Every structure is written in structure tokens, then in C-alpha cells.
Amino acid sequence: MDIVLIAGLWLDGSAWDVVASELRLLGHRPVPVTLPGQGDGSASATLDDQVAVVLAAVDSAAGKPLVVGHSAACSLAWLATDARPDQISGAVFVGGFPAADGQRYARFFELRDGVLPFPGWAAFEGPDSADLDEEARRAFAAAAIPVPEGVARGVVRLTDERRFDVPVVVVCPEFTPAQAREWIKAGDVAELANVKHLGFVDIDSGHWPMQTKPAELARLIAAVADAA
Image (tube, rainbow, N blue to C red; front, side, top):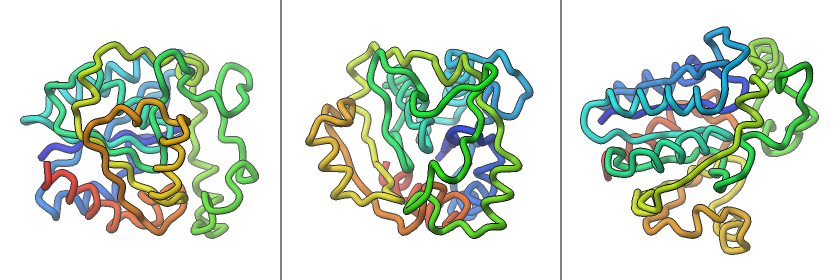
């Protein structure tokens, strides 16, 4: 199966390199996406530009692909599901949840000079980064790509309720499936409360399992694809 891989804030498509290699060994065709403004040098990219690139990957896939979003990019995976509910076999959210209609794409960090820079590790102390050593942290921060304001402050627009018919699996790294269920029950993740086929998978890692547990993450994604 084709598997579209969308990395979160500050990352380009290379974030999936090891996961992609593992997925190939498991019989799937990974399609890592490099998003406009996150690896192509475009400082004027918008959220719509990123959605268009994800949709192009979906449209060019063989059959009905699985769409995987990490962190903030869970919203991109969900926007693609909303736009192509009949063309996607399922969505996987790694370490994040999709924004609801009308919400800003990345509303949690401060803009600076027209971009959203990596805010530093103080913002991710605790379970998010506990499995990253100092060398890994330095490498991540050095490679982090500031996200254009047009992406970060873009407004999520969802229009097709058939998205709720598409199976969704939440991969839970720095939080547990029990916590995720509680957040959904409490109304904190409105979109997932309406999904008809919703599953949860635990992975013992921080917020970036594609770096710290790539083989395990690939196996979990491949299992979802095989089931689909």
C-alpha cells in the first residue's frame, strides 16, 4: 500500500527516512512529503499550499493510500481526509490530533519576524523529549526549519462529514491511549469524537518516534495498512 507521510512543524520529508526504509522492507511504498515552507525554501507558503501538496500525493498514489500525520500535521492528514474521503483507506495520527474547523493550524507558539521558529527545548521538557539525548537535541534544533506565518496561522476548513467514515488510528507516544480517550470524552478533541472507526496504539517514546523508535513506528503503521 502507498503510505503518505507528513511530518510536523519544523521538519521536512527527510524526517521519515528510516521509517520509510522500514516500511519498504515490510512491503509498502512510503511517500514522504516535503511541505511548502518546510524544506523547499519558500517563506511565503500558506496552509493551503501545504494541503495542495498533500492532496497531490494522495491523488498520485496507487489505490487508496494510508495518510499519516505527525503532531501538528495530523491536521494536514485530516484535511486531506476531508477533501478525499473516498480515496483514502485510513488516517494515522502520530503524537497529535486534528484541529477542528475554524481553528488555527499552529496556535501554540509565538511568531517572530513572520515565521514560527523552533521555540527551544524548554517548551518540550518532560515526556515529549525524555528519550532524546543532548546530541539528538542539538541536531534537531540546528536542522529545524522555521514555519512560515501563512502556514502556522492558517485556518483549518473542514466541509465533508464523510471524513468521519474513514478509519482513524491514533499512535500514542508521550501520552497513553487512556489519556487520549479521556481528552476525546472531555470534548478536547472534537473531531475524533465523531469518528466511527477509531483505534489507539501505544508506543513507548517521546514526541518524535520517527527519530527514536523508527522501526517500531514503521511496524505500527504497516499493521494499520495491512488491516486496511
